[in-house]
Image 1 (spheres, rainbow, N blue to C red):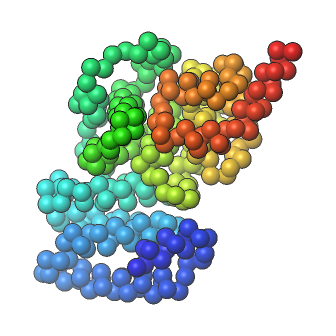
Image 2 (image 1 turned 90 degrees about the horizontal axis):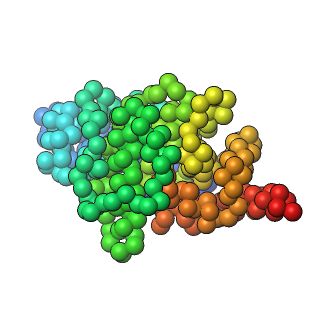
Length: 335
């Protein structure tokens, strides 16, 4: 009841209400009583873990970082007592993804250090090595600038890109054929992609902006909460700062990749208008690529990384004013 009340308070723009507070205190009392009795098998049961997961989500939604970190630490301790995430998966295949979702969500919202996968992590490709899309061939419109740029990256970062690229392909195929992705592919891709991106910290302004752009793109897929973009405040701010640093840098990604980063920033910008310097930069890059229409912009996005069914409608709407400015500028040059 507490999490439901908090969700609707946030959705409707209400203050954290007394009913939600009542249910919160009641939930905490019940949870504390259960955890204080270690001989009780329910103290580390799936149900107890789910209560902590819900409390963590609620703390994240209301912006209580201290409570959220406490819940994450408690959740990690219970999972450890259960034998770790692998044993948790053996007992309940879907529970580890729920646990990791809270952990990742707190990192995106507040910049907290993740409590899972903080020591041992595989850097090998996860999706791209499993041949989910059979008979893959190089597309005649392959973005060669993108391919060349990937070769300059830390292999750990380029491996994550390949997985994100594979997931986008799977999503597009699923949408085109009317099928759904298997839940385990969705949740395992989320865990594999986002934990690796969170663990990396490139020194280069170009590569760090690319990492944060990938993270924003991935988060916009895996953390799609209607009308609740404030959940990713730390990521939003970090990505904006990284783009500002990139604008000052001598070395930048290829123009198509740069435009992709700017589009991801613009379509996920909480402020609506966003940073005016970056807004102007978008027009500058579009002008350099002679882009004046949605179809031209869409082709560039597809040549880098895009999921049509998730991003087309909202991006076209958000970018309409920018495209109108680009079209007017193009018409002025032609005349």
